[in-house]
Image 1 (cartoon, rainbow, N blue to C red):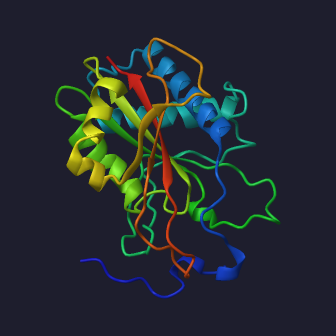
Image 2 (image 1 turned 90 degrees about the vertical axis):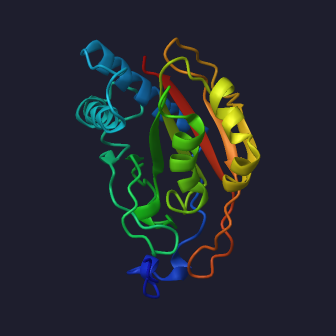
Length: 249
């Protein structure tokens, strides 16, 4: 059973007048950069002989993180993504939910920008990042039940990225699963539109003009969050989610 966290849980060492919610937006350029990093990591996995079509969710995510952290962040092979600009990429690192009643939430990947203007920074560093949830979508893992009900909803209820304005969902898509044919219909079901509090169903990100044979176009959805932020910071704002579906056949 969840228990209430002590007063001031989120602001240990930081008075509530020294941080703002929501945190400032990451912005589309950051999303596009992380997309390039993820795509490049998957290319490296394919070239190394890693079997994306048969690997489990945890196996793909662990391998993906290993390539990103041990190769791409160290070498700077993807311009803009390097040790100077990004902290180490974590996999399933424990974070608390929006009110501290759940202390061991584990988003699949966490990309954390280094803060250049630390003097004027007004966020909670522990919760300031691009939080990413990864799910397989194939013949045995439905876009509705697995991707939406077990993954996407965690951003809506304040388990992940509760202080942020953006989050990211990644699908390891197999068996010709696509956003248009599988995700949008699943999210458009009446019960799921309610549970996901969809303000906007996935639409193509117009800023993303790149095409490749192993990834769907980036789509963007918007969701209402019906919880209140700590320290009387007011009701949580909507969250924008970026959907990246990679062909893992």
